[in-house]
Amino acid sequence: MEKEKSKPIYDKRSALVKAESYCAYQERAQQEVRDKLYDWGLHHDEVEEVITELIITNFLNEERFAMSYVSGKFNIKKWGKIKIKQGLKLKRVPEKMIIKALNSIDYDKYLQTILAAAEKKSAVLVENDKYKRKYKLVTYLMGKGFESNLISEVLKDNNLT
Image 1: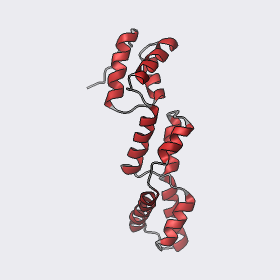
Image 2: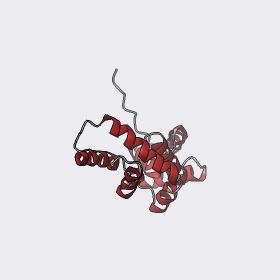
Image 3: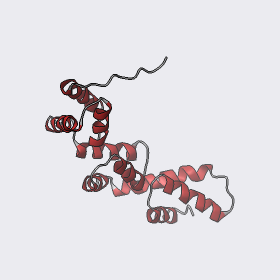
Image 4: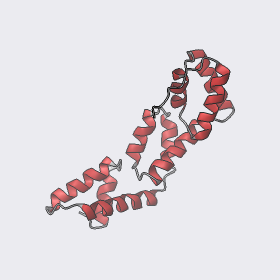
């Protein structure tokens, strides 16, 4: 079954209604909504008017989006702050909101997440050489977006090196 392409919406009113349901379904960044409105065939002025209306009616809230994004990526995907920050930057979330949202992560829980990921990965590593094993473990954790100084601290404190 082929996916049908939705027809562009040229009417600002119907675009607003559709954008409201788009935002109600899941938290969105302003840029995601802006891109969607352009896809629907709206022009710059109309897009900005719809965005403004969505913000006024609280369908669109960048700070709420950032908090939700951070919460989901950390609690569900177990990503580190570096990877989460990159994801938010790609969505063009302002730096101040990114910092505020990242600061909502509990530090102790963050360290526990690094430890849990390290222990899980360590259990499946088949490398016998101590240094190669540590390298693979650190590389894996950095790929998940954790900071190298915290990785070293957690590995050392828990004798995983």
